[in-house]
Amino acid sequence: MPEAPGPERLGALSTFRLPAAAHELVVLEHPEQIPALPDPTSGSDLILGGGSNTVFLADWPGRVLLNRIRGLRFESAGGDAVRVFAAAGESWHGLVRRCLDEGLHGIENLALIPGSVGAAPIQNIGAYGIELDRVFEGLTAWDRERCRWLRFGRDDCGFRYRDSRFKSGEPDRYLITEVVLRLSRSFDPDLSYASLRGALDRGGIARPDARQLVATILRLRRHRLPDPARLANAGSFFKNPIVDPAVARDLLDDEPELPHWTLSGGAVKLAAGWMIDRLGFRGERINDAGVYANHALVLVNHGNAHAEDLLRLIDRIVGAVEERFGIRLEPEPRLVGGSPALVEPQPRAARR
Ligand code: EPU
Image (cartoon, rainbow, N blue to C red):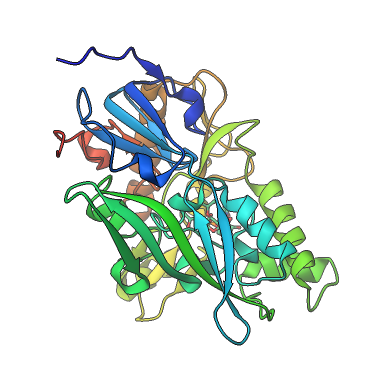
């Protein structure tokens, strides 16, 4: 029997910073390390990038693989198109900035989203009217079940709103090492998102250039969302629910101000933040677990929150929204070791 490693603290590796530990922690800096990884000494593996979308409600009994693989290169793809090959351990916002400096366009609206490049396709990150799948071309991943390298194209990834095959299909089966984006040298921004359009109008900017657009997104995010370096959080804590048109019609008859977006196909996405806000939750706390004062969709850890505080707060919000609006909210980040009602897989036995 290999000697058991000591517990490894995980708190600082997740931006929500609940206290938790893992049996073992391995930092990956090169793809070549991956096929050579020994079997975990206990439990199974959990893959962690920037930790901005993973909340530890309990210790992880297995091994945590921390993806810190770096590297960035650009390749012309004909005409105005440029392929960007970004290693999974790069910072997402660092990539947005570098592309801005290189005069490459398409991801300006996704500026300042915390987390790593490798996490971006897992939940198909999105903001201000754009989702990653619009510019995504492919990714490389190690299939931990069949021990082989695989390349996934856009249609292989099962992208949906804040979801992909890597999140809800088979979490932790594929270890993403590189993401390929297709960006453009010409600037054709999407300014359709209401609060973005409003902010540009207020600044008197009818047609922003790329730097003005990024500066506006940064201002919007800094005003509405807490900086995880100062106040621990995991971004939006609940997904915006998507409902059938008939359900939306009934609800909107009662709540005509509820912000909503009709999706292609007719389903309707509802603003969960508005519903939570409407129920007066902004600024609410259970010990150090709280609802952010400037945005009701964001839960925060004021310093010493424990999993029980957060779970009680989640229960209270989910129960109140269901009672008032008849809609059951689902958490957006991955809740590790959560209660079964919060749908998170428990560690599986080692696969190899
Ligand atoms: N609203 C309120 N009160 C609140 C919060 C929101 O009335 O406390 C209203 C807003 O005024 C607006 C509507 O709800 O009319 C939607 O709010 P917002 O534009 O802030 O967007 P969101 O739906 O709450 C989503 C993403 C964010 C992304 C923003 C902007 C999800 C789960 N969240 O939030 O993404 O930045 O749109 O595009 O889809 C994240 O995923 O972690 C994230 C921060």
